[in-house]
Length: 137
Image 1 (cartoon, rainbow, N blue to C red):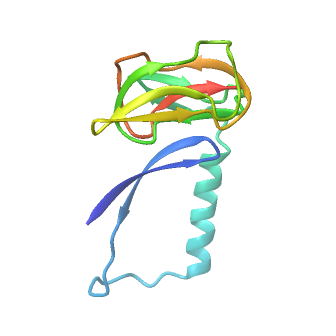
Image 2 (image 1 turned 90 degrees about the vertical axis):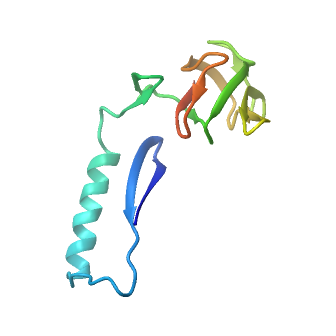
Image 3 (image 1 turned 180 degrees about the horizontal axis):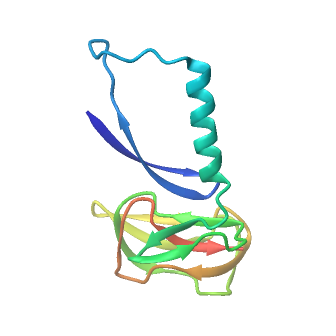
């Protein structure tokens, strides 16, 4: 069975597929050191990629914008209210927006002190889990 997961590494969002392997499955014996080195090089090439972009609201967004923090949606839902505007100063713990999911309102708070660099969503828009919401510098 293949499962899909959303992973964020160094501020870069990835969607990965993982195949579940059981004891009854036949697994090819591969030298573990060789396999580990190959995987490490693949991961490093993705992490150090200078032109990292993600898709947000069907548009490509550059996330190498020198932001201290990119705020991603923790779950799918609807943005009920955006409490901040571009170039506004925020403190750690300030409520940036209200995200409704499963008939519950969830406060998305700032994890850092900074200034709102960009707002990638609008009120009443539907967002997916892992979607870029706000950039703070």
